[in-house]
Length: 371
Image 1: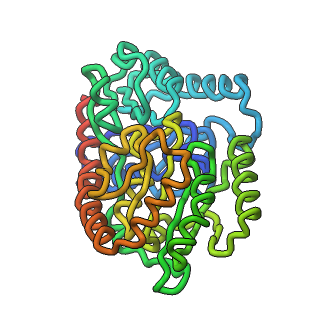
Image 2: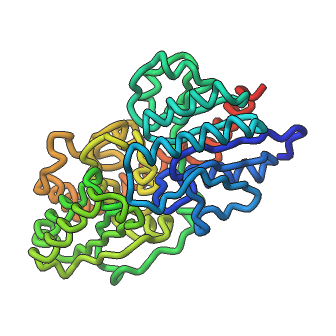
C-alpha cells in the first residue's frame, strides 16, 4: 500500500537497535512493514549497533552509547536529557511510539508529549501502576488482556507478534541424530528465566528418558553490563561441572526461527514478572515451532498456554522445584500423542498472534492518533 500522505513514525526506546535490546525483533518487524507500506520511519534509541541498525529505509538516531558498564542514575539522566533535547528540536514526526518495560520510560514519553506536537503512543508490556498517569498519552497499547483490564479508557489490547511464515519455513538445525528428543532453553541466562532449574532437572530426566538431549542457546550480549547475569552464568556453569553433564550442548546466539523448528520441548521456567513482557515473544515463537512449551504460570502466560491443551504450565509456587520441572519434561517426552495434540493446538493458538494481523491493528492506532 502506498500512502497519499505518508506518516512519519518514530520508535523510541532504550535498546531498540543494539544487541542488548529485547524489543529489537518487535520494532524491526514493525519498521519493515511500515516502510513497505509507504511510511517514513525513524528509530531513536540509546545506541545504534551496525549489526542491528540495518533496515533499509529506516533512519536511526543514537541518543547515547550503551558501551558502558556504568548504570548509575547520572547515566540514565543523561539519556533522558538527550532524548528531551532531541524531541524538543525535532518536530517532524506524526507519531512517537515508545517501547520499554520501564515505568519511568512512560513518564519520559509523556514529558516529550508536552514539548513535541507528535501523537504519543506507548506499548505497555508489564503490569500497570498509575492509571490516571497513562491517560496523558494519546494511546496506550497493552500487550496482554490482564494489563488491558486495569488500564484507562485510551488503552487498546494489541499483543506482541510472531512471524509464523518465517518459523514455518526455517530449516532446522541438526543438534543430534533423529531419534533423540531435544529439550532446550533460549535467551540470556538471567535469574528471571530460571535456567539453573533447567540444568538441575537434566539428571532426573536423563535417568527416566536416556535418549533425551539438552541444548542451551545463551544470549550473552548483555553480560558485561549485567552483574546478575554474570552471577547466574557462573552458577549454571558450576552446576554443569558438578553434575558432569555430557548430554548438554551449550551454544551462543542462534537463528530463533531455525532453533524453534529443531527442538521437541522448549522450557521457559520464568521466576518473576519483574521486567517481563506479560506474554513473552519467546513463548509465542516456541508455540509456532516444532516443540511443546513448558512454562510457569507467571504474568499473562496463561492467557496463551492452556495447561495440557497447547502446552504445560507449572504453578507459580513450584517454579523453583526442579523435580516438578523434570516430571513435566518427562511427561512430554514419553507421550507422543500428547506432543502431537498439543503442538497442533499451539499452532492454532498462535495464528491470532501472526505479524500480519497484529501489524494491521497497530497501523490503525497510528492513523487514528495522527489525524
